[in-house]
Length: 145
Image (tube, rainbow, N blue to C red; front, side):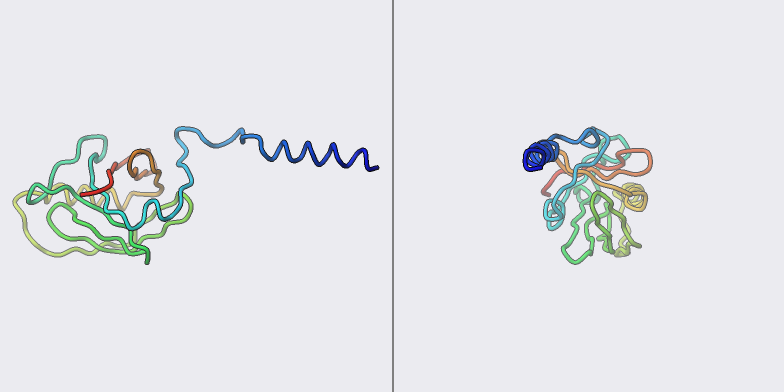
C-alpha cells in the first residue's frame, strides 16, 4: 500500500505544476491584480481601431478606475464620472455623468468614447490597458497623462 501512495502523490504534484492546456491564448485577457488597473490615470491612444483624436485643449480622453468602484476621467470636452464593476477580466461601467460644457473641439470624441465605455465587457493589460467589447478591442490606453 505504501509503495502505491508515494508514486500517486508524486504524479499528482507533477501534474499540478504542469502548464494548463487551456488559457494563455492571445485572445484571452490575462488575470491581473486589481491594483494594476485601479488608481492609474489611463490616457486614450486608440478608439475603435483608429488613433484617438485629442479633445479640448489638445488633451487626450482619460480614465481612472478608483479603488471604491468609481470611475472618473476626461471625455474630450467634459469631466466624466460613474460606477464600474471589476471582477476577474470582466469590466462594466454603470451610467456615466458629465459636466455640461460646450466645446468646439472634443464633442465627437466624447460621444464615441462614451459609447465605447458603455460597450465594454472585458479588459486586459498589455503594454497599457485595453477595453474589449463583444467584437474585440474597442479602446487602448497608456498609463499617465
